Amino acid sequence: MIEPHAPAPPGAPPHWTGPARLPVRPGTGRFLVLVCVFVCAACGLVYELELVAFASYLIGDSVTQSSVVLSVMVFAMGIGSLAAKRLRWHAAVGFGAIEIALALVGGCSAMTLYAVFAWTGGWGGMWADGPRFLLVAFSLAIGLLIGAEVPLLMELIQRIRRQDAGGAVADLFAADYVGALVGGLAFPFLLLPFLGQLTGALVTGMVNVVAGGALVLGLFRRDLSRRARWTLLLVGLTVLGVLASAAALTGDFDRAARHAVYGEDVRVAVRTGVQEVVLAGGTHGRPLDLFLDGRLRAGGRDARRYHEALVHPALSGGAHARVLILGGGDGMAAREALDERGVRRVDVVEIDPGLVRLARHDPGLAAANGHAYDDPRVHVATADAFDWLRGAPPAAYDAVIADLPDPGITAGAKLYSQEFYGLARRVLAPGGRLVVHAGAVTSRPRVFWTVAATLRAAGFATSAYRVLGHDSGFAAGPDRSAAGASRAPHDWGFLLAAPAPAAPPPLRLDRDAPRTLTQTGLTADAVAARRTRIPGLPASTLVHPRY
Image 1 (cartoon, rainbow, N blue to C red):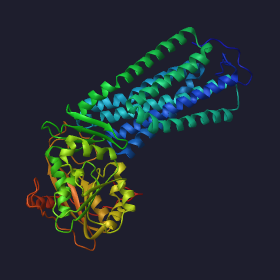
Image 2: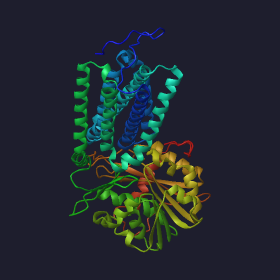
Image 3: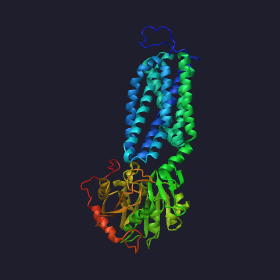
Image 4: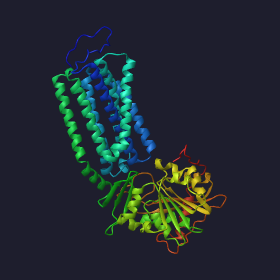
């Protein structure tokens, strides 16, 4: 496919094919190759970050998923670099083919992963392992193609003008690393906010195929046979057309996938800058489902049951005039607190102002929280709960309610740490109580009792209890749950804590008639929770998370 060149000079390597016949001066040609290295490196890192983001978003446990994606990709880059040694005799056409393949695979990876997730019922059941293998397969394929770029680009640079290997490597890696920096910054600050994950990946693929095609068909076109030039051009244009068409259809695709995941009653779907918030139903008599980053956080009659179990045991049996809610931006925990007689002030610390706006103004969500944010006793602070506690006044609250993401979600692990509970203990008034949602007791007892051990290490005495739920989807745990999930009973585990040396706080209900909880049921569920106890677990800390 490559036309013959002049004989190799003395001392040239065995695969030497002669200097490139460029349409520009060698210095300009070398600069253009380094520009292509820069662009391709930026695209490669965007593909990498996009896989990490999708893995963390769709599967959960961001540390594990990031480690899997990055380690597989780096391994594959080494294998790809070794495999590309055989293509050095055809460096130009090989590089063009690799960039086309990389643009197609990397550009379509996000849409493919989301499609599999949306139309196979999530990552559970019979698909529990299949989509994860697909994620690894994309990481492997993209890594192989990125790794194959380096030796081919080195060959192209050397064919423009021979130089010592150290200098060539330094130039190549400098352009590569600077491009990676630009790609790494462009992903969170440009592509995600303005284009989103799907369109961002597709646009990156288009940039990738244009950059690779321009270098090979423009700068090195004289090194290619007529057949090779036309083949690369037609295939490249086809891939470019596929990516552009997919980008034009992302709106329709996103709506169809959202309905497949959340059901047909989706009314609101926004990315707030902190998380994706989806509201389904909540009007015309339909039950409201609230999804945060794909996890059903409130749904059906279990939404009230969960929040009653979270709030009322902590506010019963003692002073509760001043209440602090950490998280709970949906307003449902505030609704329950306001329903207790004697509550004078409720402070809500929520990191996502977009969720609070919806809780104030969306008719379905505002009705679900009883228009709690219209009550003058409720005050909202937009802040990370950990950081806010560090500056909070001591002994300021009678009760602290931690309505936070599940401890199995890595991003929230610090909110279940010994340090966090130490800060929460500091803001409690004498005789105050802290309640924590600690995950499912039945299915994840080790996580639940690790939270209990962490509370004890922070100076609390604890009482464990659980509440059974029955609606589909709204289950405790870090995994995403879809509206069509199993209807098998599940539970939420809670820990009611009081600063030591006080005895563990009693579990009782002062309300005359809670809608879903009874004292008898609460006592029985506390006994059931204690039966699952796992002794001897270590506490979770910031430097050694245990979840």
